[in-house]
Amino acid sequence: MPFIHVKTSSGNIKFHYIISTPDSDVADKIDPDIPVLLFFHSLAFPHVFHSQFGDPLLRKFNLVVFDMRSHGETEGDDLPDGYGVEEAAEDALAFMDALRLPPCHFVAMDYGSPVALQIAISYPDRVLSLFFISQTCLEEPPEVREGHQQVYDCWIAAFPGPDKFDNERMMEGGYGFAQFMFSNNMTKMADALFKISFELSQKHWGYQGLKNYRIATLDFLYNRKSQPRSALSRIRCPVKLVYGTDDVAYPQEYNEKFFRELEDAGVDVSLLVVPGAPHFVSVAHANQ
Image 1 (spheres, rainbow, N blue to C red):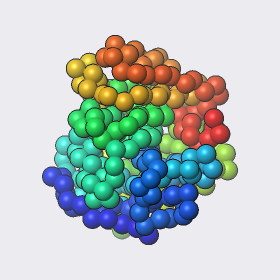
Image 2: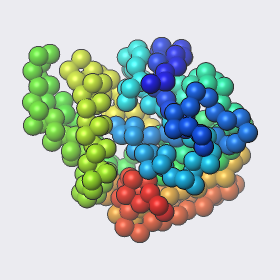
Image 3: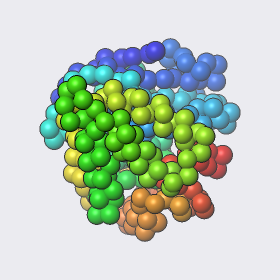
Image 4: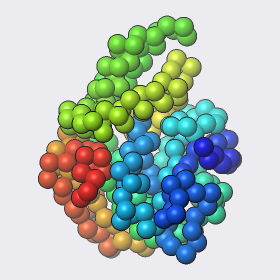
């Protein structure tokens, strides 16, 4: 597995990543003659772009994906209190620098979208375009907070002590989150992604990692704020928003509001609404 070490203001990180090129599923480096698509994954599901990496249309390019802090195979220091979007963006930039990536087309979903957005605002010359799937760039809606809190409480209750765990409660919390993201329609692909992500979540967010779990989920989500117009106006690339009408977590108005804010800030933005798609649009409706 490819890993790369970086150090940022919030700690030491050993990022796990994959580079796919037209000639190799797992390449040592990018092909400098073709564009780079850099993928930012969703909360708790680092393999959510599996279908995109198998798409012949996209495999014409360099595809790069990395596991964010406290996710997947990435390792490193514990998350410090206060770790949020700006710190995650700093980590991602350090990863880009370590791999010597040129300006990239960002493909971001859910949890990864505010991180990609922050880079586009702070370092607009590093981003060629933004493709947001089920973006979460605005402040978390109250009803979504309530849902995340329920999943969090269920997961925490599964680890009453260092040598004790309640597997049923743990599964209940994990599966509840998966249903939240797949709109209660667990296809074979969704179930496979859940099983992989569930095992990795136990690794990162077991009893010894419950603080990381709180910071990476509740704190990260709850402390996220909407970007002001002055910040959005710094974006220099086109933005595409993709939203599924069966998203039970975030209403369509949430995406339309972000669309209007980008438009008002002078950003070249468009919105694609996919009928019948859940929050994890890229899994259930990969072809579209």
